Length: 356
Ligand SMILES: Nc1nc2c(c(=O)[nH]1)N[C@H]1C(S)=C(S)[C@@H](COP(=O)(O)O)O[C@H]1N2
Ligand SMILES: [Mo]
Image (cartoon, rainbow, N blue to C red; front, side, top):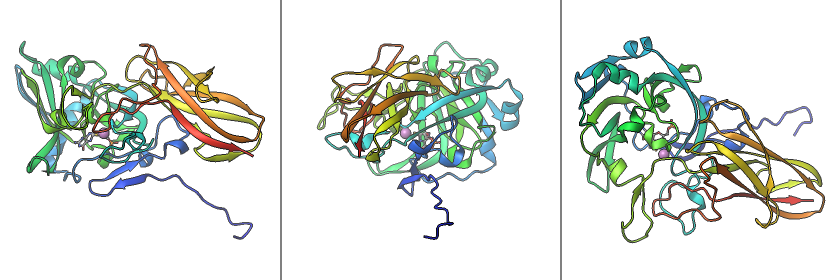
């Protein structure tokens, strides 16, 4: 290569499947607290829906006193709020499960974070009223498609228990990072549910139904359940809140470094409370050292950055490990809880590096 020629390496999304489109964020190259939309991971169950006029209307019905249809204009005119948060697919890090499980083999990039703006669902329910019977709220997207396991067409739909649905930070969002939500991320409106895995944040929202019983759609009763056993469904429980977790952003796995000082650097996040501590180990988990923590987005739903100065004096091969704790006393385990569909992987993070 010519000496004056610059080698341009740009981060890019890593494609796991084309239709539906599933792509990972290049998370270890992200150095801004809010991920630009072109690097935000994509997770879809069906081909993208067509956006027609009705996509700009949201109906709220069921166990309400006054069923209503809100236009995008209506939503824009109501009091808004901004939610800065991590969004993580429940299948993030699935590729690291042993024994292997079926499903997209996501590594560390089925997650991103950024700032969503919209109106609280609780605000909209002030207009519709709710009946005393309501137990859950069902959110339907515009996208649908064929499910081989059920031999039929289904829409992407999920419910929330009423207390989570009316939490003031559960919003009907219409902006991401200060601009209308990109089409592939739910334009014009999507649900945003902080602290729960990504499946809860339904894109291309078309209808909200309050119900007096429990919702049993396939994306709730079949998928997004933890199945502890390979051959039976005993003990299945729903996937809800994000587990305490961390990812080492620097050094990258299999990096070759010189002796000297290196900054070990990463992110940690949780769906309960906030991160209270991140520790690193250089001796296979025998001893642990505290790291420095700092928050960039100034949001309790954002990830926490952590860093540690490593004096790498001796040449050789090392395993760097990191484990996070949250304010609920949860800590990353040595082994993730294995489950048949491969959700919620949060074992202690590690990278291998060579000092030469
Ligand atoms: N309508 C609809 N909403 C959806 C999905 C979907 O397939 N259809 N996928 C869910 C899942 S599993 C995740 S992880 C997030 C991904 O959001 P993103 O594609 O904007 O990153 O959207 C959720 N909302
Ligand atoms: Mo997901």
